[in-house]
Image 1 (cartoon, rainbow, N blue to C red):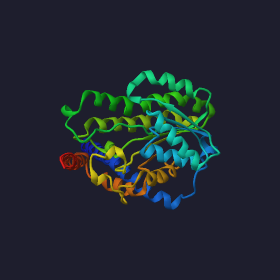
Image 2 (image 1 turned 180 degrees about the vertical axis):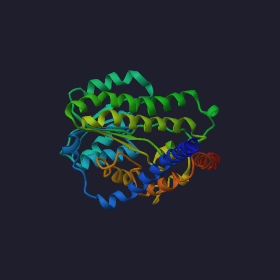
Image 3 (image 1 turned 90 degrees about the vertical axis):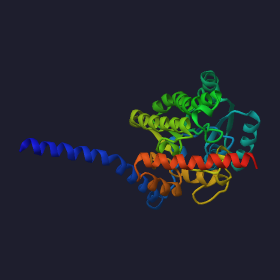
Image 4 (image 1 turned 60 degrees about the horizontal axis):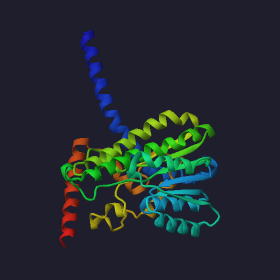
Length: 315
């Protein structure tokens, strides 16, 4: 009798724990949609985190738009990207938005791996970084089977998506810890929500960003450091240029400016977010089915986008 009761209790606990994670994720997604309604007051970024912000991948797309939003809020900026000419152009655009701030630039190609971080570290020395936006990322040229992806492209994806977020964080985290404040914003991707065939390695690197962010938060939140993890879904940027259907802005495929305006307003309020309310709605419904269904849907969508690429190429 007692053995039977114990077995039923164990069975009940297993079911409870199996259901807890997906229920928690769906509840978190729902709260993200409701948050702007209940907490619309903007956070004063300079007083809460510090006066300097670093943005990687800052000459295009989300990174550039996010840097402009930081400038509008009076943050001094350090822009890091690959091409010096584009950095200079972006710097001038930002100073037009707010001529009262300081803007520094660092030319660095994160695909080169370890060698570039010595240069970056020397140029960040003695600057109290309040916010680090780990935005730089590398996507597949178009949806491909693993054996089709050039080896150099795979190394670039790993070095940029995994290496940059890790080593850039390490460069600034100790100083934030000493000052007892600061924010790390890690921009991931909705591709992390399930294994993603035809974008296999890209999606896997974004799972790393999620895991890294959650563990880092557990390590450093007690020292006053905020670690935010953003998971945007489709945004109209050059990264998604392999399909024309992703180059048309809409409610669910915002342009980078719209995304950044929404995303920056969540900093200091939530630790994990898509960064954009309409993506939050998509995220809510995405997380309801089990992972294997989400993977199959993702595979189907990528096959459609792959077909789009070849149609555009041969048009």
